[in-house]
Each structure stands twice: as C-alpha cells, then as structure tokens.
Length: 302
Image 1 (cartoon, rainbow, N blue to C red):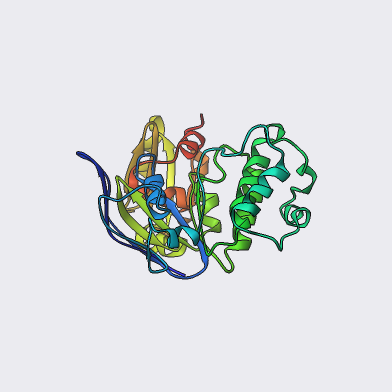
Image 2: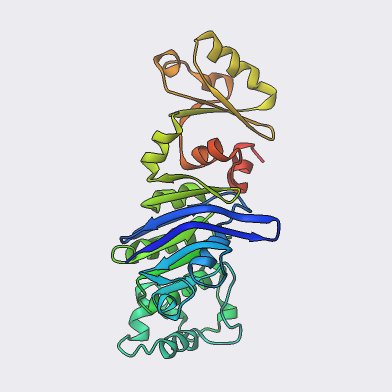
C-alpha cells in the first residue's frame, strides 16, 4: 500500500499550479492535504486518481502509474461535487456501486445501518439533507473496499455535528486503509489526521504530524488582537523583552511568541485579548500568511 509522488509539476501554459511536489505515504492512516484556496489541493488529488495528467514528474499507486487501469482499481475517489442522481432512491445508488464493482457479499441494510443511513433506504436522494447526502457519498465511496481512499473536502458546507459524523466514518476505515483527504475546516481535520501536508502557491512547504508541525513553527503561543488595540500588545511584549513575530490579516494582528516566564503570569484578558496555545489554524497562518475563510471571520469578530 503506497502512493509515491516524485518531482511533480503541473502547469497550464504559463500558470504553474504544482511545483516539484514530493510525497510518499505507505501505511494506513489519515493524510490531510491542507492549503489556501488556489494552492493546488484539488489538482493534486485529481492527478493522484488519474483524472488529470501532470505536466512532468511521476505518480505511482502501489507501483502502477496513476493513470493506469490497475491503479484506478485500487483507489476510491469522492469529489467536492454532489454526484448523486437526483431522482434515484438511496438503494438504487448503493445497487449501482455493487454492480459496478461486482459486490455480492454485502447486505445493503446492514451496510447502511453501520453509517446510520438505513432509514433512508427508500428515500429519493433529492429529499436528503446536505449532511445525509455527504454521508451517503462517503459510504458509497467506501463500499468497494479499495486500499486507498481519496476524499476532496468531504465535509464542505456542513454543520459541526455532520462533519464529526463523517470524520468518524473516515477514522474507522483508516485503521486498515489509506485515506488522503483535503479540507478547509483545518482544526477539526488536523485533530483527526495522522499526518499533514501543507501546500501554498503550489509548493509543499511543510509536512508532519500536528505535534511535529508545532515544533517546526518554532513558536508555542499567539496573542490576537484587532488593529485598533494592537499597540497595547506590542508595548507589553516589548516592555518584558519578549521576542515576537507579527502576522497581519486584514484587521487581525497575531503576535507569535514562545511562552516565557516574562508573559506567562500577565493577564492579557484584562485588556480584551489573550494568549492561546497554537492550533493548526495558527500554524497554517504563520506559514502561509492567510487564515482560512471560516477562521478569519471568527477571529475578526465578524
């Protein structure tokens, strides 16, 4: 079980989308592809599954070329789009997958029950909620039991409860299968992932477990404040001789620091801001200069 990517480039005339990507994963687990919009995540996943050809470089799926029939048999792929047939029943969608892959030893009711979908067996897909549609699509993707599963933003647009349900489905199958997933709910995705690849402007800029990425960031905490009050933070940090790195996103100022005794006992909350331990969104912003859309709105108080 292995996905090997060597010196991968993808360009459209003068527009370079992926630049010298080198990745190798060779054991079960959840591998997160993270990065800002336009960083090349979806293009990378589509090249891995053989839907898009690279400009140069090599992509191997268990030793076979990514665009070969042999490789495609080993990969299950779910795109961002809702690919359910609008006027079909849920059982018809499951039957389609079973016929396509010659699956005969699966009880449809028991399989759907495993994912809390059995009561929707005779529903038309157009009647399902957004979260239920995505759970059904994930269940359909997993049904063929391929060794490698590729999921492009499987929880996009869903509420927190629905996202957790799908992540629990993914976690279960990752015990003996390799799951490569992209997502923009970064903190949630990082908590479920075993290993993270961070892309920016088509380049792989950072990789490792969440613990390793914190270590590579070389900071442990961040102080966030609106622009109109950031001078207060700078004054307090400078007064204590604390080294910091400032990252700015719109009206949000983020001061990255190491948690030192000089600041550990200072109550920043009295001034309306606080010191927090770095989460993956903070690491992502530190290295790319951008928060995800959702996090930027939350931190800016929108």
